[in-house]
Image 1 (cartoon, one colour):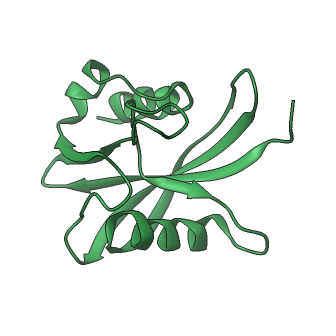
Image 2 (image 1 turned 60 degrees about the horizontal axis):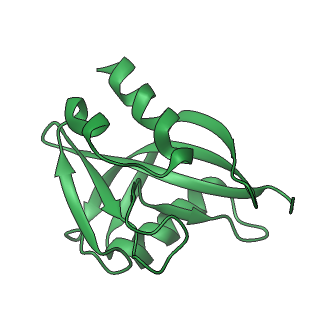
Length: 130
């Protein structure tokens, strides 16, 4: 197996809802839902990565809040360590720039969506914290 990918994810909240994105069909785990975020670049902090990724993926500026959960998931061909943070939008309106679709959902409805396996512990943590 290749080395572990270090990635970030954002749990963006607004009016009691959480933002999720549907991965493009051609992407790894395509068609499944995820929390926005991405790979940490060399020399970048997780918080810097998340701000950059949210600007690229959604066209928004966010304030990165508390670390919600860190989780490690092993796929057959790769391992992913995710640092998931709470985040609040400072400016802009989210747009599906790198997803097939984005959606605001109630936290209690998250389990009804087909998430990428690595994001399932994040869903569980959100449900626990309600």
